[in-house]
Amino acid sequence: MSERVKPVIDRSAVDGSRYEKHGGFPKVTPAKVGPNFGGFIEAMRTLQDLAVSANAPDDVFGAAQAKARELIDLLEPYRAPELHGPAGRAVELPGRGSLLLLPWRVVEAGPDGIEMTGVFRRFHLGGNGAAHGGVLPLLFDDLLGMIVHYAGRPISRTAYLHVNYRKITPLETELTVRGRVDRIEGRKTFITAELLDEQGDLLADCEGLMVELLPWQP
Image 1: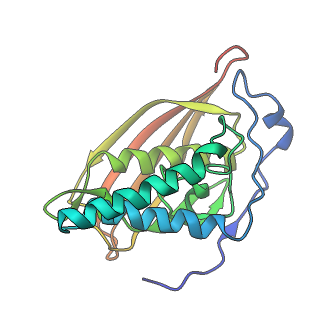
Image 2: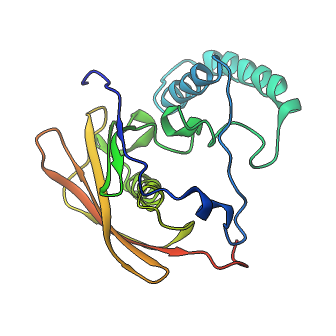
């Protein structure tokens, strides 16, 4: 895997005043997290990998279950509603500190588009060494939302996302995803993107439509 470098970010098209009006969507503010939260999330990602790959004796699974119950008991008193916990709002962390999102790294972002790199882990296995087809739309959909933001477009939701699967997508191999605004029609932002392997071969591509929220739309 290549050494991580500082991403190139161009926020020139982002109009902060636009984000005061979200339709019915709540305004999301970045979370300030302590030094342990990122490590906690990464440890949980590794546990997800192990949960789907471990082939252990039943007593080991029993011991793991007991430890998992201890962790549940530790965290349960701190369960919080949406936008109160840091997960999904820790913007400096891979995947914004959310276990749902793929922890890919931004290489470049701006009004002309976004490029990210990352891997699909064992947790994302579909079968026969390939990433599950369902995680590719998740990656693309998150990318679309970021593209809308850096293009300076208003808060929008996905209207459709069409994915073309061109080749098998491998696990544990650094890949690149990139996309950009194709065209704008009123409230509609049309976006195209593609997923590439290390040799630059096309693994999948997508066409998406993001639609600006109206004042009463959640």
